[in-house]
View (cartoon, rainbow, N blue to C red):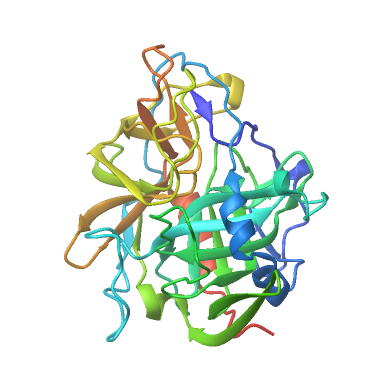
Length: 355
């Protein structure tokens, strides 16, 4: 088993002060990096050099875990299909809502390529159509007790030829507010990020230096739709997992490149406990995803016609359940009433245009 962040959970003592507008156990903080600066930072060269943000540790769970609802089941419907006239995604029958997030490690030299990282994520329903769901370890560094820098989201990311040309089919969206549970990783390894309205970027290289031309792209949910959200469901669901895996298996094999979206399908089940990582109440399904898929969605009741379903989890931990040095399951924290509390706080937070 591998925590896709290689970190452990922390409680309120290790967290930043909670926003006065959030419930006591919800941490909400605005990005310290100006949105324009974050988008300008990610030139095509840096996009291509960013590496999957994961730290592999192989282990196995020790016993079964009971994933039980803490209240009645609930759900919020998806936004729906893309707006009329939206560009066609190259991902046939795959959700346009899913993409890659890019960020730099905090308190480090952002010019050093070793600090350029990426995860997976998805647009999800919110009052202002500005909400991204991902893993907490894709927004927060528990070692340094701070959120990541230069955080952006590119939905429907595609790098099929190995050369990303600076075009994002639905725009680029910079983080405004990070929202997470105060018991971060890996027990409550999920986060919701309110993003500013997007911009369409056209990068051009002039005399060896990148220059950009930008236009307003509008709200994320208007451009790609947004997945529904559900909680307190049975831990046994038929679900799809989506993401951009790129890391190696424990045996060193690299089965994925991270350039294009991949998916797994199966029936979820309760995963074993792993006390070493404070991992409890995870649900998982058979899947060979590796590092880079972190933060991608578990979608229940997904329909390819609309490319929407209900977010029932996020990729958090990869497992080698039979000890053969190959990952064979992916798991998510079980979404219960606490998860809904974080989601509701984020889903009702306005962001608007970049300042």
